[in-house]
Length: 106
Image (cartoon, rainbow, N blue to C red; front, side, top):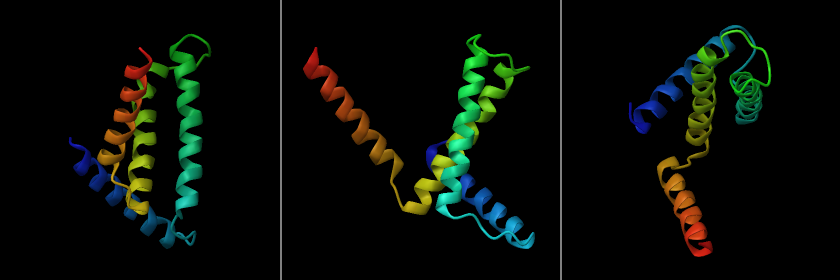
């Protein structure tokens, strides 16, 4: 799946979450709520990485790792959409900058 379709799918799921939360009387998530959820997912990812690397005990850590990475990616895609960030352009600019920096150091 390409990035644009992943982004569209992530946004569609975020809209479903918003409708679900509004119907439950909780209100739609703000960008701040999304960012806090992302931080929680990154924490879960860190624990799974530690378990896969033998530093913690979590049953099925290897199998759970992909799901948690996808959770983190979902948050990034939705936040980028909500803030109007062109992720492919930003990724290219960021990696080009790193490449220039590392090339000039070598």
